[in-house]
Length: 483
Ligand SMILES: Cc1cc2nc3c(=O)[nH]c(=O)nc-3n(C[C@H](O)[C@H](O)[C@H](O)COP(=O)(O)OP(=O)(O)OC[C@H]3O[C@@H](n4cnc5c(N)ncnc54)[C@H](O)[C@@H]3O)c2cc1C
Ligand code: SF4
Image (tube, rainbow, N blue to C red; front, side):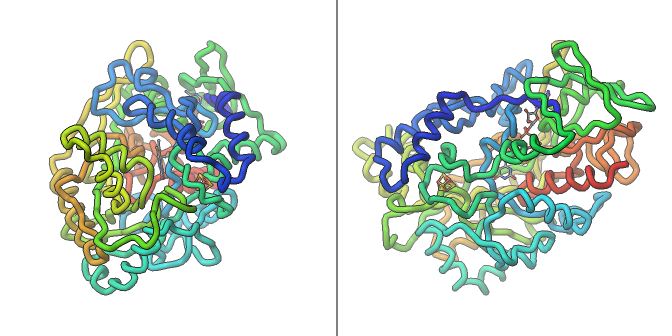
């Protein structure tokens, strides 16, 4: 495995270990604030965990002239962007895979195989009938935060009305160990390392016989011959083998493909557009949502199956109170209203945010080309239907949540910039009969036999229901069935 291989700096790792050595019940407010502050101070568009930037490259490392709208970033870390992710996992639905060379049933055994090492917290509920490719029976969930618990009860009570709106609701599924300590620091780096990251599995792989891990080796291209593939590194060295599995994240994979495939001038990334929809709860909290034990990962999933909005599922994940809410409200509106901080702090305790995603058919696309220095240029291919469909989806999510006592502030819905969902791919889509710019059902770029593209690059499209679990299952499928 040739890998970027960056890891958390030793000082940051020592800080993590020191906090994790103490029981969260004994942490002071100052401990918590000190843990969070570096994340609040991250540069615009960059995500940090553990006070470190090791897991995300700045835009200029990948793009020669990054446009301001461009929200996607690459990673050269061991474990890549999974060091930063929100850990929401769901399988794909067959109806969202129409026209693909593989089916949800083809992915089924590979979801199961991935779940042998990927912890998946969650319980069987109404989502299972809609997304049967990965059953939840026998699993345990994370206890929802108090606000989410109250909302789930209300959603269950309004089930009939919600179903009439084409929605199915259930607890979130997260790739998190169920020994979660409910310390509430999830969005800043789990001190206990309980949010799964690919680096955890990499540590296990390192012990496997015949597995050779080479960190700090940046791949810049490859060349295939009838007998072998040679991979070129930025150091000028090369490595030759009989088969290559390419999964460097969609931006880095694009760089490598554009440098390696003669005649391929551009790759077009498809985005799953995401939108943040703030909602105010109309009921009173029984307990303070910012006090006590809770996690701040997604709490509830809502799937909208409404052909009048989209032939595909709209996927929403709901977040209850977290420390960003009051800060964001005060930053955005506080300066206009003197003495308003206490009001916004109290309002934040009644705020629940839905982050919803659209299928890539409704989203903008990003065309990538290669510059002379090996970086990329990005240009936007707007989708004229995106705004209309996201407005309709926001309206429907708001209506559904209205049945459970939330008032959606649809006027304040905020779409993320293209790529910023990080649910992006399908730039070399698998096809039954691949043409130039496509890959076969084993992720092999048209005309190649020994190179398999195993990240989201080879997905035929990006359905809304979270990307990583399906990419992992597809990679496992390719690894299982390749010659
Ligand atoms: C803030 C945030 C929240 C997210 N939340 C979710 C979520 O809740 N659910 C979900 O499904 N997805 C989520 N995602 C997306 C998820 O993190 C990605 O889909 C996933 O990490 C992609 O995995 P990957 O291995 O394809 O690429 P990456 O994670 O980018 O990993 C790339 C790997 O390739 C290596 N590499 C890169 N370039 C080179 C090179 N040139 N040579 C050698 N090695 C190289 C890197 O070191 C790394 O090991 C989120 C992402 C972010 C940033
Ligand atoms: S609440 Fe979040 S940060 Fe705390 S232990 Fe659980 S997953 Fe980790």
